Image (tube, rainbow, N blue to C red; front, side):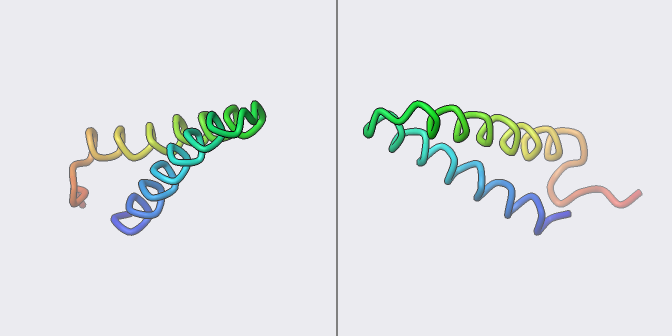
Length: 59
């Protein structure tokens, strides 16, 4: 689970960067998909760390 949270965290960061680039290029579809990806993956990482801690509890 540790490695999965790291990967999902990186995806969320890249989605945030993509959102900024979408605003610069005025690409509405890019903005929508990147925002949705950022919210979904970012929420998963934050809630996983909040409820299980980092590193996650095994018991």
